Image 1: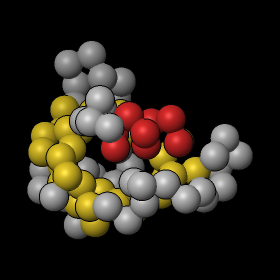
Image 2: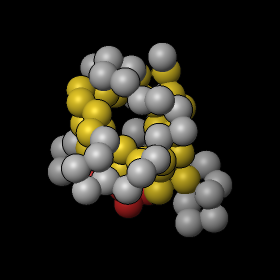
Image 3: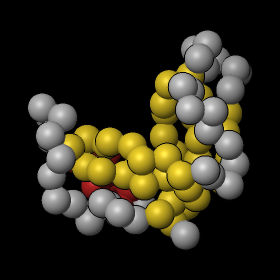
Image 4: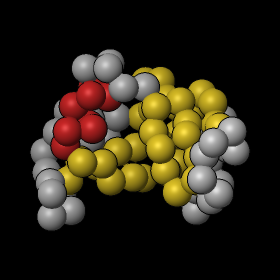
Length: 81
């Protein structure tokens, strides 16, 4: 499964630099280990912007539910393909 997700520029930068290798998301898509995530960077108004993260494939390496995570939400680890 491929998930196309918007991401604010500041968080996109943290992923591109390797400082951030996870995402906290509402789990309305049923994220699973092995799924692919493609990000589209957006500005504070939610409008698409050019960014190095756009179109890069990241693989979900782990999905965490429960354990202090609010119901309906998850945290998933990502790595660049």
